[in-house]
Amino acid sequence: MRVSSNESNRQGGRLARQARGGFTLLEILVVMAIIVMIAGVGGYYVFQRYEEAKVGRAKTDVRALAGQVDIYRLNNDDNPPGNIEALAQQQPNGGDSLVPPDKCLDPWGKPYQLDVSSGKARVFTTSPRGQVIDNFTR
Image: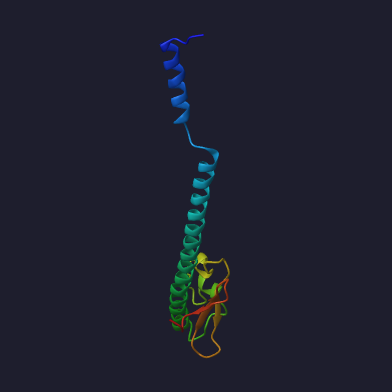
């Protein structure tokens, strides 16, 4: 049986289209694996920078809170506050609060700590990795 030239062109064209069609499953899996590896490495660095930003914010906050403790002492006959939360309440002399209540919490959601036993206010917190952050260290 002889195939007409018109029919052979159609079959040849169909084979040519199939041969240059989409990607194989293996090619798609390799590309997906590469994308996942890049995203994993990138995600690790983004998370690391996010934690560094929280530590930076905590350093700024402890210095600012230490300044507010000094203002509290000046306004209240050199008496220090009992804790950091006292800065967010109305002052004993009738003045307004020195800081908003949300500023008494560190970036990890724990309240900042206050130590006035040495005579100078030490405001501090501890990061989840155990790093102590206070207003005395740089």
